[in-house]
Image (cartoon, rainbow, N blue to C red; front, top):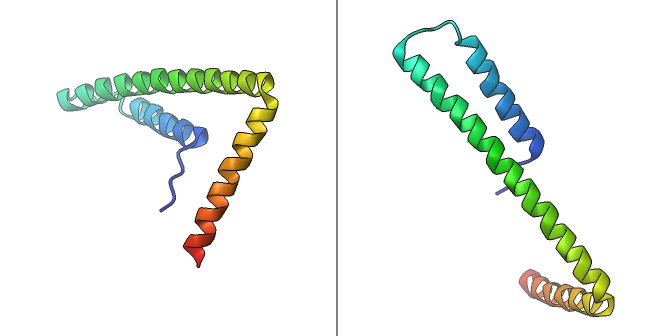
Length: 95
């Protein structure tokens, strides 16, 4: 099962939603107007969530970089240990 949720996919979704809003701009039926309002709100909420996730990812990367720079040898040891453990587990799985 492959999951691919990337920025281009989210951008395409937002573009499609905006195109739908533009295409239905002249439709005045109550249901369409309500659906357009909900879609516009969903787009704005999605932008807010996406920006928050990007901000948290950048902050986490900066924190990890700082820890690695402050403790380089310990970081190498931890990375080696995790790699060895994963290698061991994967080799047993394939046997």
